[in-house]
Structure formats: structure tokens, C-alpha cells
Image (tube, rainbow, N blue to C red; front, top):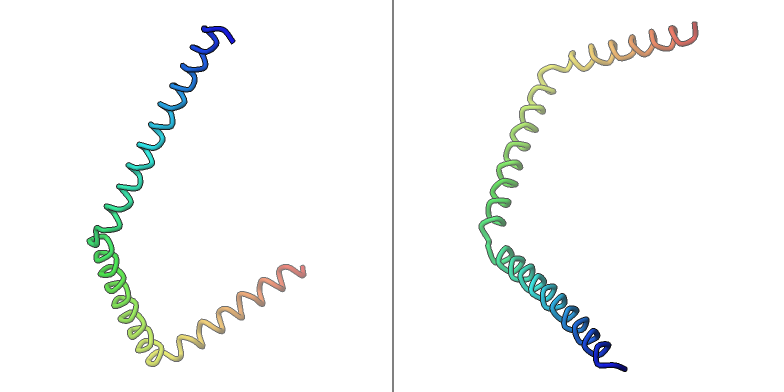
Length: 96
């Protein structure tokens, strides 16, 4: 092996070593960012508060729906009859 081939291989090895050092540095930065975000509990707390508010809103909507369903029973009958009429018209139209 000649001196120039040895020098070329040494340069390739040095280049690869630099590439690996850059990749390792990037990996360390990503790991550090993940650690910082995981230790920051404000995101978790804000998510918990948002889910609590959503749960309260859903509970309130559910209570209002129960009240309206209990008071307006004839509305269900009307909707049912309209649905039956629409399906009947659809099937009659489809058969002709």
C-alpha cells in the first residue's frame, strides 16, 4: 500500500469520525430536549385542566339533554314519523 492510499484512508476515517461526532451531538441534543420537556410539568397540568373543563362541559350538556328529552317526548315521535316517511318515500321512489 502506498503512502497516498494510506493518507486517503486516513482522511476517509477522519471524515467518518467527524460525521459520527455530529450524529452523536445531535442525539445528545434530542435527548436533552426530551428530558427538558418531560420535566416541564406545566404542559401536563394544562392538559389536565383542559380535560377537566371538557369533562365538566360534557356533563353539563348531558344534563341538559336529559332534561330536554324528559320534557319533549312528543318530539321523538315526530322525528320518528318523519324518518319513516322519508324512508318510505325513498323506497317508493327507488322501486319506480
